[in-house]
Length: 175
Image (cartoon, rainbow, N blue to C red; front, side, top):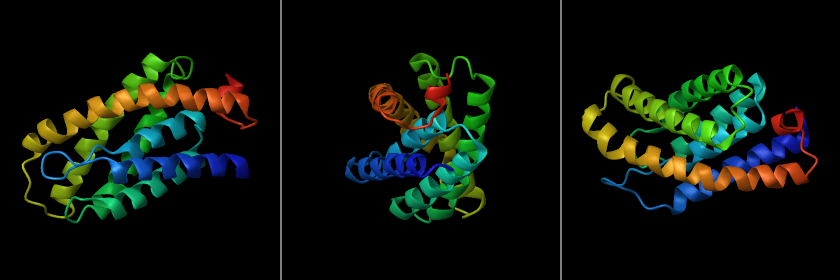
């Protein structure tokens, strides 16, 4: 793994953490997970198994540390690992199209749905949280999908332009 690429991945995770901290919560303090958006961008830029694993673990741990959900640490790690690898498989399968903003935005939306579902499911199964899955899915996950897709549509082109001007070795330089 290239050190410059590791630095860019760390910056993406850091920006996601900063956005996560400053965005106010909805429905009792639950927040859209901008770390997830940045993880998706990282996977699009660096679609390799090692990079995906590293992004998933770091975003999972940091999301877990900042989670406002009671006992949300472990569900965040599970959610990010599962979501990252499903997103990665989708990116690999759609390799020719995944770099297009419309396709990648749809992937980010689907990824957010997967993430929210895995998070809520693991919170119920692993932590034993007594939460209403359907109600939280409708009131938290679906609004988070909309917010994450809009954020992705705004942030991804900016990062693409910055990366194209730099000497980073990303999927964009091989496209």
